[in-house]
Length: 97
Image 1 (cartoon, rainbow, N blue to C red):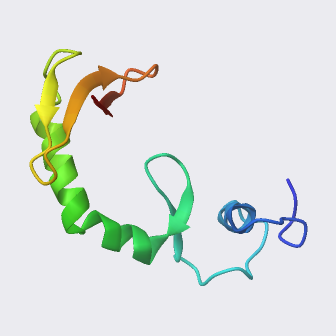
Image 2 (image 1 turned 180 degrees about the vertical axis):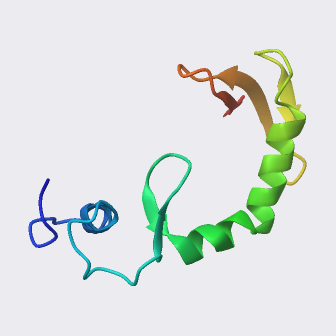
């Protein structure tokens, strides 16, 4: 694992910090991992979870979660039609139709 001085990207520096390879990148507790495992800012993550767009999208996903694969649903805020699907991992996804 490269040290922070060897890491060339911001993501690499954040990852090194979280794994304990350095203590000089950000204040303690400033970084967290999101649902996909990416290292992100705690403040930005918190703000995104409370954004209007994300709240609406999550409600849309929850409402269509148990529908059969291939079913179409219209997203209320922009009128676009999405198709219910499953990712290779089995995770529920919505694809633009």
